[in-house]
Length: 260
Image (cartoon, rainbow, N blue to C red; front, side):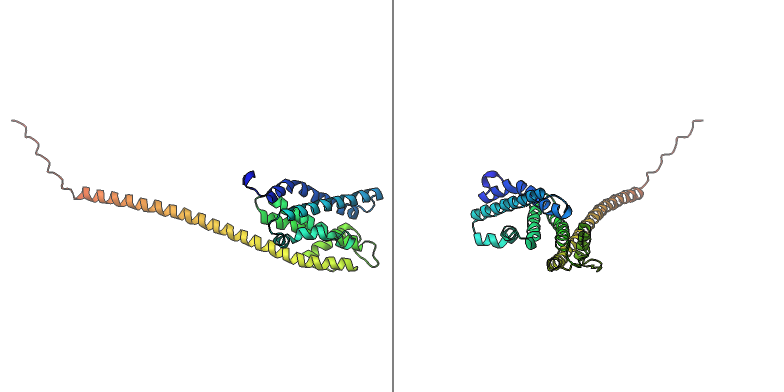
């Protein structure tokens, strides 16, 4: 698509794809660092909070500009609910993880535009992001709570994995209301993502099987054509041989007797 044929909204999205992708990673880093390394100083925490705020402001600006450039604004909102969630949720703690997840998924969508297998890339990045962020969120909610058994981020990620896979060994479980809310969202999301990935893998195998069948069929068609050509040549040779056998042999002339 040429630059002159692009709409203003498409030109804006093309210009902001890469910056917002990196800002999404920065937002995730700012959210994850204090949970993974709780011993960092207050100055670093303040800096990371400002990174979160600045990143959120950038995504809010992007959403506002694209909304203003859209031809049908109500339709744009209906088709960009995830973008709206990313900028509309307040920054207080219980919804921070949902905001981070929304921004990371938006970044994954921008990344998948540049890759070949867009659906698989988008689903895989979303699944890893849900697992990673849910583990952080439950660790943030459970760490230091009375009766909690999830104390480290490694335990949070392990809990997130077995919960997302709907295995649920029961060795780790949240005790806080916020942690249980994360569990509900993770189970629902995990089932949906696993179903999506399973369907995609099944479709990929079916497509690969069809391609293999088509290749085999094409090879058989070529072999049949060669066999037909060979049969035709054998028939022609057989006809030629029969004609040669049916042709009468001319009598041999007597040799002259020697003169006595």
